[in-house]
Image (cartoon, rainbow, N blue to C red; front, side, top):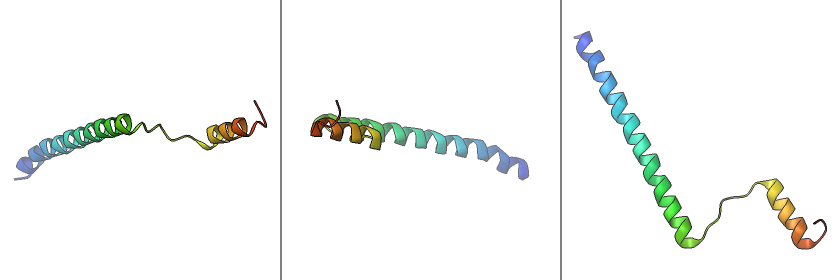
Length: 61
């Protein structure tokens, strides 16, 4: 009975991994499509935002 339970672990884990990767790919495609349609850019980190802010104010070029 123990051998039968072990043999089911690998297919179940494999199915979960494939489903997770498939979901991640699907979400990535949907996010890229939404960004393209709405012209959304990537989020910027704090240093980049500070440099843009300084450039717009004209304090540092």
